[in-house]
Amino acid sequence: MPDLKVSLFDYYKPHARQRAAHLAREKFILFGGAVGGGKSVFLVMDALWRCLAYRWNKVGIFRWEHSSYMKTTHETLSDWILNGTKFPQGPSLVAKHDQQKHVIVFHNGSQIRYGGLKPSSSASGDILSIAKSLELSSFYLDELTDFPRDVFQFVGTRTGRTKAFNPYKGAKGEWEFPPARVAATCNPHLGWVKNEFVDKRMPNHVFIPSRAKDNPYNSQDYIQGIKEAFGGDMQKVAQYVDGDWSAVVDYDCIYWPVWLMDAAARKLKPGEPRTFGVDVAAHGNDRSVVWLREGPRARVLWTAQSQSTAITTDQIEALADEYCPEEIRIDSVGVGQGPCDELIKRGYNVIPIIGGASPDDDRFINRRSEIYWGVRKLLEAGEIDIPDDPDVINELGCIKYQVAASDRTIKVESKKEIRKRLGNSPDLADGLVYAFAGAGFDYILSGSVTA
Image 1 (cartoon, rainbow, N blue to C red):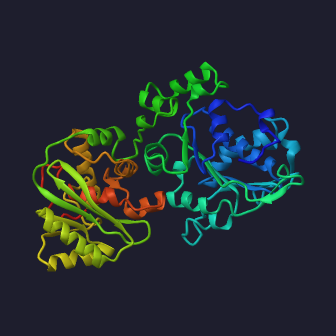
Image 2: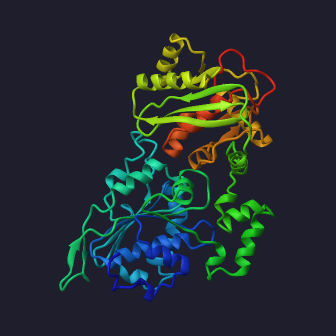
Image 3: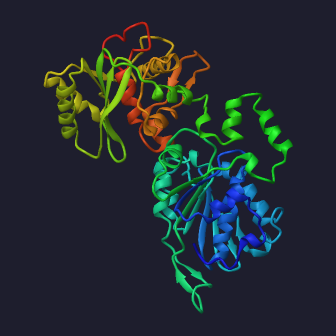
């Protein structure tokens, strides 16, 4: 932490949870959870504090979508810095505001950059293209669950790369690298954010919760108004007013959190059939995964990253020889085609998985949607036992589906869509549903178990 002799706390009075977040020494900070917890104010004032603590410092405040930033976070930044509605000293600190370049320059030379980090649709397809152009001492990310995990990880590498002048260090001050800082806020949702900050508490990460009632500037009428807006939905109240991450519910997702957590706590007796569900990784952060299903029970046998398909094939063979599955169900589209063909040649009972194939049930747009829905039926009925693993639960819990208005067919997100939205492929989820393909229905999927 810098020696902040220019103390923002002399003018701005954060509540106890905000103050704890301001003083956190970890590089990665997640603050808040509830509506009305003071999340955006924390981001804006923490950024301002770092700008006042150094001369010629550079920080950035962003949301994933620029339009969302301008409608929400920028309103808070304007109220507290640009027009001084909430912080009268704010405008006197600003030397220049370049609205075209989205930069605020203070009289001491420090800068706040702002906007959205999502590239335009005309960009090359590289989701990091905007982030790659930035070198800042601190990033502030509002609604972190909107950001792909890859973007969050990348901006962490762009901090601590620019020097600023600390006028309070030594007799005359010194140039130094301000402490690297990636501070973020969001409401409770399943996914990688919950996995890394709330469930696992990764190294150099800190989660500081804040509820609506923790903010003394909220009146009881304000809190009651939020509760009434949810129309008696107590799960939504727990999620958005109390900031309860265990109460997360997203009706757009195919698997509801309560079903997943119940399935993770359930202990069912292993039985038949015994099948493998296999997803083969393509590249980068994607994982090759082998699931073992024994009747209602499923467990991950093996995962690996960045290895050749030949090694993956040998590993699947070794596991098959050990566990003797009746079927090995493999996603045979793309990179999985090689291991699928090779294992068939070696004499194993391999069932190719083809996501875009026609379903047996015309309620679904394709086989992928059909087998995903089958697992939904098992979860809803309490007939499946999955690992109590945040990686598994959070990945399953953030996969979305939709029902077409024209013919009422059900469509589950494709791998490509999920990778684009979240920044990673749903390898664990896909392997699980392959292992259970057809189990949630009264009929047997015809031909290949094509998911």
